[in-house]
Length: 412
Ligand code: C2E
Ligand code: CA
Ligand code: CA
Image 1 (cartoon, rainbow, N blue to C red):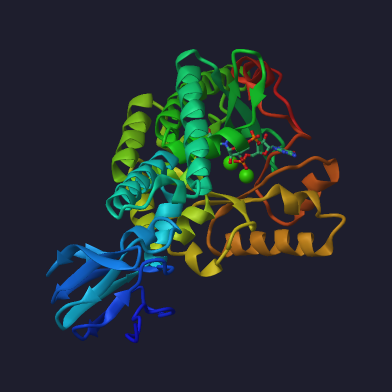
Image 2 (image 1 turned 180 degrees about the vertical axis):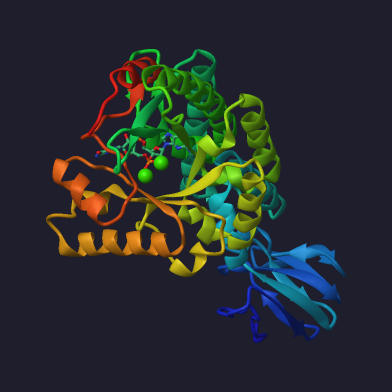
């Protein structure tokens, strides 16, 4: 056992090549593994140690992969691999897979782990190791529980959508210039059969994780655009000549990550009969920061429908100012955290003021979120913010209450 183990420990690149001379051990049974290998040229032998006796279980050649299991779970190497000829290997680092695996759907994770676990069991039996040598895989148990929880919630959400447990509420966005209603933000609500409300902050994340946000998002868009038509009629009836209110709809990054999903949304917009100039889509900056190239493409695509685009919760994310002008954005929504602390914290006021200046220079409009005090309205107006939204004016309301509000011709 004087051969050196060649397992590369820390390399910056996630994929690179190495050459292993015949006779060298690439990794040993029981060692920790962080990389997988693809054989470019050469031959390796896979062996297991049975009570001190080496038993060869496979020979692998060009194009074959080994060591792949450690990329998925933390279990130690289940076999020893030795080069039996001079062998050129492509090394694939675990780091390359960690992100996509961590981001994968919990069911997908479960599937990977179960297949792996069964494979390891089979290998153990082959090597004659008794089952009692096996320590229970607690992390697999966790993956299993998480997957089960997700399946249950996804089923509940699907059932909930069919049973009309989801409803849209609408929060007025006012013009700070006139004090009247300029538009609405559509906010989803889930009222379960037992009457309890689940916060969108909770279920939107779950819906994103399970992929159900696609269906839910299409439903919310149809619903909100149908409501916009009613609100526009009510506005025209209440105040002749005043412009139809816009409808600002939240879209999650997931909905914009697929071009087919964007095409669905474009269809809904087109067939809704709502003037696209009266439609705004809100998204958070994470989408833009994570994959700017795709985001730029996706936003250009969705902009073809004629809608305008807003960045939500501006100032809370990475807020790399350099990205702003790369995207076809129309509105910045200043996060309520800054608006709320404006008079108590000088830095919050400066942030609001800088965001306002930034928006002006980029020719974008501003919506200040979370207005709860009268003084905030005038302060925001002085800073040149065009729109405001918050509990001071109104909480998000069901459509019928919005209709009554429009008829009352409110001014703030
Ligand atoms: P958001 O897009 O930032 O929505 C604004 C949230 O601030 C809403 O919470 C609203 O009720 C709340 N809010 C408005 N004014 C005030 C105020 O003056 N003070 C305080 N404290 N809060 C105020 P909500 O409705 O619970 O929504 C939470 C989040 O869930 C939303 O944050 C959004 O990220 C997500 N969400 C809601 N509806 C949808 C939807 O239809 N689609 C998607 N993708 N996400 C949604
Ligand atoms: Ca929003
Ligand atoms: Ca927001």
